[in-house]
Length: 360
Image 1 (cartoon, rainbow, N blue to C red):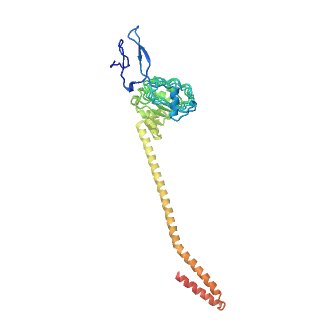
Image 2 (cartoon, rainbow, N blue to C red; image 1 turned 180 degrees about the horizontal axis):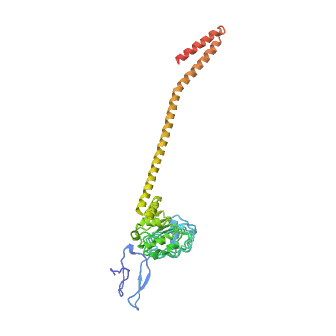
Image 3 (cartoon, rainbow, N blue to C red; image 1 turned 180 degrees about the vertical axis):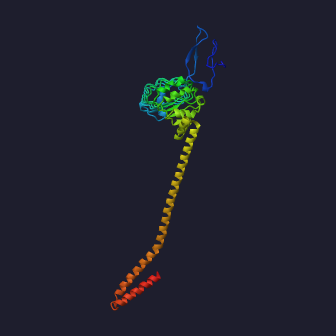
């Protein structure tokens, strides 16, 4: 029984291993390796292996996640956090547009020749050391290989529609490691954060990317090695709209360009002009709001006056209508008296009308 394995899991030559006790998080994969201390001495060492991406596993996975049992009908596969060490048996899944392989033990990008319709590929948090075998995926738009061990960007200029590349937390260090980016003319979003980049000479490479809109360099020493880092990048990258952790507003760009032309003094004047414009916009908004409020108050006042007028006129109108009705009845009654002369009837009507008016 051996208690002291070396860092790579290899024991000294001549030691017979009967049993090895490992914790569950150390059971990664199993494969046979030939080792020995001399030319004539070989040993077989077993390393622990995790689950494989078999056809049966994929079918069961589709069934459990309510996906299609017919492979080519699926457009998404969620194969993250499964412990796979190899990409395999995806030949029948030709309709995939999004493939999640995050947080596995993958060491290579391989066996994806059948995924010609793939748009998004997520390979973050694996053990990948190289960008390779991506050419068949001509429709790929987004590639995430963050948290791996990649030390060179390569083999992605063959992807004409690749617009987003996330390669944070890798091993990129010098200018040569990212030189290939100058050939990626379609890239608009680039995440290089938390690498080992430290040379200001990476700026010409970034300038050669005509569609670059979003850039993240946080966590690299180059951020402190470039004087006036944010202003410099805003001036040199003309189309940048988002840098690191915040947007690039038109005000930021105008002030940075003024700084590039005339230093801090011209930048100060530009900021004062923008402050004046901002104050004017705020005042115009307040004035417009006050005008809206004034019009609303006027409409309310007219409405209240109209309601008071209607309340005053309604009793009068009802009185007049009642009086007219009584006069009509009285006139009909008196006109039926043929014995009375007409002047007398007319006088009675006048007296009756005056009495009714005084009453109301």
